[in-house]
Length: 113
Length: 249
Image (cartoon, rainbow over all chains, first blue to last red):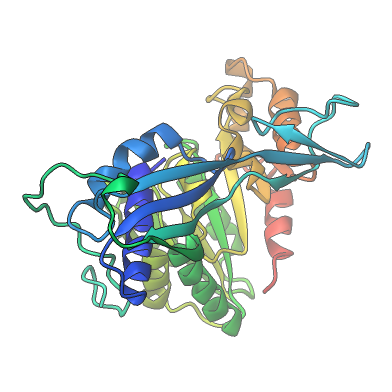
């Protein structure tokens, strides 16, 4: 949800960091998006060029690295991959006791010139 | 300087349209070599930092914030009215921050209970954020030890994703909304610290399986307390009031 605002924040972070590094432009932005971060990556990719317009990030490639969601089953003491919050433990069929990964939403690196 | 309210928050980079040619990002066009900068910045960092500031501000006052989330019409305001009528005059100061796209209807209802209230109108926005709530809390100026309710914008999706500095999140689901809402809108139940099943006085008139709703809510959030109540009749209210009384800074 709010992929345009998220894109705007990503661009603002990248633009600010590029200026701090005395760069003239950003050629690539790498963003980590967890599978359960509540972000539609297609929408984010669609919104990104709009958000870049007029900044040092204009023209940059957006690389979205998907982060797998992982749940932990207390009964089995096992972690397992999840696509949805209600995905069950493959061993016992129970629901996850804890979500251990998958809600990440961060700018990891930028390439600047 | 934040150009919404001049509060000192930095502005995002300007996004003006210019008449540039089509954007290119191909490596072979570059003369200078690209440097890779390690950033590791959480996209939600700005809101989370303000939420942390709100949390500190509240902690200094020993105040506790309860964030109420639900779809529009689940009964948040009526639950609040009833709760405030039961709690006012007791030991603990009370306060409310109301969030709606438009109108001060809910703030007026709360004001009629005699409890201090501030209304936020978000305009087009579908959720409250830490910036808005921070300012509203300052306007509300709750006394030491206060129990403050934030009634979020009616929306079962977005509010759960925005930290406001609250102590707890309570998701309200009415029996007229369908018992599969935890399955359909999992984030609101996964992130909650308690669930209220409201309008229980209407249960006989609807096909709502209370056990199913709670079962799936607990599948998402194993220790989630559930309060089955009617703000209208008062049935089930005491357990809810007792739980609120146990929330301390």
